[in-house]
Image 1 (cartoon, rainbow, N blue to C red):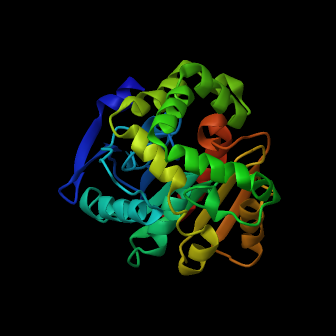
Image 2 (cartoon, rainbow, N blue to C red; image 1 turned 90 degrees about the vertical axis):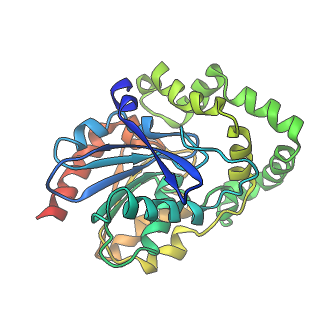
Amino acid sequence: MEEIYSQCKVWEWKGLYKINYVALVSSGGPAILLVHGFGASIGHFRRNIPVLAKNYSVYAIDLLGLGASEKPANFSYTMETWGELLLDFIKDVMESAPTVLVGNSIGSLACLTATANATEGLIRGAVLLNCAGGMNNKAVVDDWRLKLASPLLSLIDWLLKQPGISSRLFNRVKSRENLKTLLSSVYVNKEAVDQELIEIIRRPAEDPGALEAFVSIITGPPGPTPMALIDKIHCPILVLWGDTDPFTPVDGPVGKYFTSLPSSRPNVKLRVLQNVGHCPHDDEPELVHEQLLPWLASLSS
């Protein structure tokens, strides 16, 4: 991890916001941009960057409000903002190199948002690892689990908007003990939930503005759904889905939507990964690489 962190750089987006990223540049093949999920950061790709960097130029970015990127005061986070950020990063930092976007959870949805709005040829392909249905749970309206929990979710939204309550809740959530419990609930491979992973999640939560970002993301508008974006995308898409995901279950509305896509869209390839949780790339990276590397090679051929 320290080797990855030591190579991090800062890009100033729009002349206003400092964005943390890492770049391992090589020749050959499409460039790859890795995009983490909620509460995570560049470090969440600790098991993937060294493997991918053997044959590709690999970039990884901390989304605005997360990781080591700036967390501006009074900022309203949206999926559209993150999509715009990714496209500007590809143009400014990656010099408009044809790019494969690889995202996990809400990072996947940010990748779809960027791809749907990209100029032709800029995005070479997209890899979605357990794609989220929205920036938060408000986007998924036809899942019986969420319908059942709807009154509780509304209460949580209201509580998070009360500064004193949200601060106490956030402090509890980001404790090492609670983070380990939460991560263990979404990982099948419990050995992957190590101290390094806990610190990857915990460290950015200590930054000024982290609480505001946490509240804004959870209580803000859910943004576009994958269903609303996919018709605008014609580049190759690889969907990898851990089948033991409590956040976006494969038998939920978003999972069912993606599992149905390959039969109607030749540009979409789907693989369900057995006994893998919400973060396949870190839970069982070898299984992800078994599918990802040949797919990337097919784009280069």
